[in-house]
Structure formats: structure tokens, C-alpha cells
Image 1 (cartoon, rainbow, N blue to C red):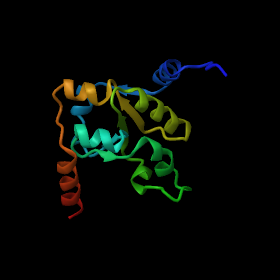
Image 2: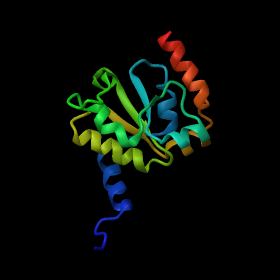
Image 3: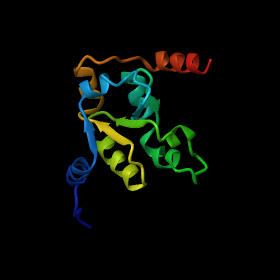
Amino acid sequence: MPITKGFQQLVDEAMAQVTTYSVSDVQARLNDGKTQIVDIRDPRELEREGTVPGALLAPRGMLEFWVDPASPYFKPVFADESKEFILFCGAGWRSALATKTLRDMGMSNVAHIDGGFAAWKKGSAPVVTLEEHKQESAARKG
């Protein structure tokens, strides 16, 4: 059975429907208390490359389940309507699709970072190792 709509068309359609921020836009909002950065990359990527300080780690494969209050995997952090959730992945493709999906689920307070983590690093934005992130998270819960 031939593919009738390829990944690029899906990504392009998502990009046309979602809010997209540049790295500098997001950097300016990192500590405003109204923004929650969400890293949807898989654990291997996190281990290899690190992440954004303060990012919520939400693997792409679990995202819809973590967002839906009816799911046994629901994470209450996603119910905070006072925050805007800004997703990123490696290059911006998965996060565009994920952002569209969350919008389709009814979230209006969701966006993504143009170019993903690759653009984040290229823009010399702050990065922490996965181990540093774990320590940072433990200190916040402390």
C-alpha cells in the first residue's frame, strides 16, 4: 500500500497550524514562570546531548497519555492552564506534530521551538547534561 501523505506533508500541515517560537523568543521567556519547556526526545538523545535547564522530560510516545486527565498516566503538571507548554525535539519535526496533536486534544497553551534542540545548541542557548538535569530536578523538589 503506497503512502498517500508523507511525513514532510504532515509536518508542513502541522507547522501551518501551530505556534512556533524561535530560540531567542524562548530564551527570553525561560525564567518568566509562565513558560514550561517540554523536551519530547527519547532517553538516548537526552543521555547523548543533554537538555534545556528546567525542561520537563516527556517522551513523545507518552505525551498524549500524560496530558489526558482520563489516562492512568496523566501528569498533573499539564493541567496548569496558567503556563504555556513549549515543546521541542531534535529538529522541530516531532515537536510540530506533537504540538498539533495536543491542540487537537484541546490544549490552546502549547507551542514548539523552530529547529528543535539543534537550533537551541546552535543559538548557544543554555544546555545541561542529563545528570545535571536530574540533580536540578531533585533540588527543586528538595
